[in-house]
Image 1 (cartoon, rainbow, N blue to C red):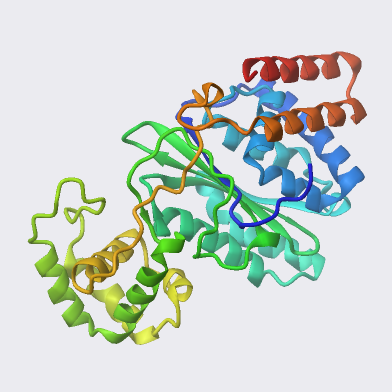
Image 2: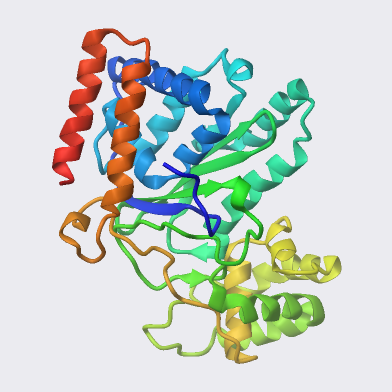
Length: 367
């Protein structure tokens, strides 16, 4: 498969939430197979190719199913990234490939893990730590789609290229949404960073990274810089007493102006030069951005986008073309590529046959 071109953020996939953990016998086999596939890809094409693959939602999904996980399980994301991380342990420097972060509390160790490896590689960790933090801030706060991140895996190479696979949870609809990033193509974290976006459910979303949100991003930054916090709080208190239409994407029920006073003062004092700098400030989260978005729209008449960035059905229903067709060509190439990789591994014949059978079964299910 050729290298991705065009936009930067390579996809989103929605998957049903499944509880529990992969049984130890299965995870041990997933680790072994993930290690073999990774070694083949890196040996033949280099570590950057592995980043390209992991950042492709179709290949990632096919890889997880090949390892033995359910097609539409949310656990595929967390287990697959954990299997790759565990599989290459002790081989990272030889492969030139490193995995930081993971699920839950492990995700919070990402910066320290990046710094530890960077120290051994004479690599400046600052750009990588920034990319890790900003990709999470974008998907958690700038795209307010109802999914709170609980998994963040940051994969990078010895030369400093990177990819992100992270997943959020929606307690209301009981789905998980996965976000893929490929760092080599990132030129702007906050302006239309999505390309191949795949999702099971869609809805109205405060989408501050949409192209049509460009004016809103500029207005929000100007408001934060130029309006005294006490005036912002006055506007917010007026807005929270309004009866907004039921279909309005932003609710005001959880926005409490007084609780935002400290962060608004901090933003005003720091004077961020653009929206990315604003988003990156400590303490600027979803509620702050919602408040500033409401002021931008209702006071200054500059509305952000409410378009959900998800475009394609991925887990269920896509094969019948509703609401959008699965990219069959890309998916078939992913399966073909994995079949070639299996044949080149050092796995035993039985293990190869089992992996190939899973791959063929997956291909039949999606045909």
